[in-house]
Length: 167
Ligand code: SF4
Ligand code: SF4
View 1: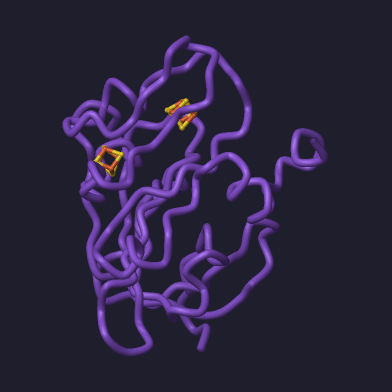
View 2 (view 1 turned 90 degrees about the vertical axis):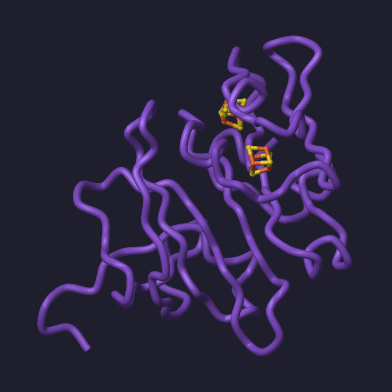
């Protein structure tokens, strides 16, 4: 798999691995998108999900997500050591969607801050606005939820803070 070399996963691969919910499920409310493609010995997501939405037979298997059970709570996002889980919410009317992701680059942004959205390759693809930030007690990781343009739902996967003086 080319992604194993580049570290950049394609939508095609995510679809093939069963990581992409249907359009209907996406419209229903927040749901986890797993982008975990390496069969490493890790089952943190299975253990961190209070809704039994993630399954794995062997610890080296890739996670299997039950999108009907997933509530989009973000607890797996906060605890995934590979930062390979995102929660997206495309249930709102209009042009906006929500993206929740783990952040470990120092102080997180504050709610209300504007951020530059980046794709999987680190390219700037647009702008978002932070709506929520929390720190998970056990992992101590921050989970940042950002309002993003709907069209970037499957594109934006990171962000950088907008520095002072940047417009
Ligand atoms: S977002 Fe919550 S419900 Fe969904 S898989 Fe993660 S921990 Fe489970
Ligand atoms: S916790 Fe993250 S890295 Fe570990 S198996 Fe789950 S998705 Fe993959």
